[in-house]
Length: 298
Image (tube, rainbow, N blue to C red):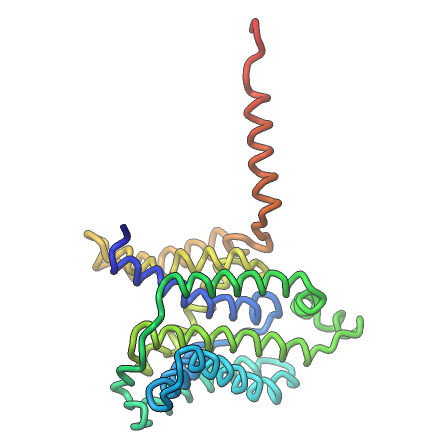
């Protein structure tokens, strides 16, 4: 049986995986860098917590409201900035992330810097796992659809995509909406799992970590982002064990640097795992094994 500590680590990994997948759609598949996605997690978390704690709404309603609030704020930010060329969008996300954290730190209604407690529990590992599976399935189908291919075309060459008749602004805004929705959902789940929220949980370091996981997984690889999140989110806790405890963050940073140096395209690059591909891989292994067997009489 898995003890409660490791079950908690697995649950938090599943929650942060949702936010990483959101950044993957925005950055990895559409080519838009965001340094403030922790801010959208904060919006989702605090809106859901307020709805459940002060509005006496059920947990599901709180999660939906938190997701919707993060999506609307993301679209409101993206509408003016995505029309501009250059790094205006990146600067806007960085600014909004820090602005949200500062507002929460000085808002006494939600506890200020001390945070908000007793926000309502009810999140379990099976629920998070179910949400992860559903989201991954939906995103995989989205990326195979016309809309997903249009986002990829924008990432590869925005000028060529515009010449093909793709509405650049529309699909950038779509990617922004999906990304912020997943960040908001992750923040809402995190708050109700931890049963408290604090502004420092959503600082710029957390935004950078989400982006690093996407870069390490590989641009253009949903599978890569999943693998990267499953490794990097629990890694600092794994390194707490034994003599590595004092060096855990050094080892974590060194691993990130080594992957970027020796695997600049990320763990998966542009490749994806699929059921068909896995079956084909094992089929090739089986054929190679039979070929290597010595013939009778040799």
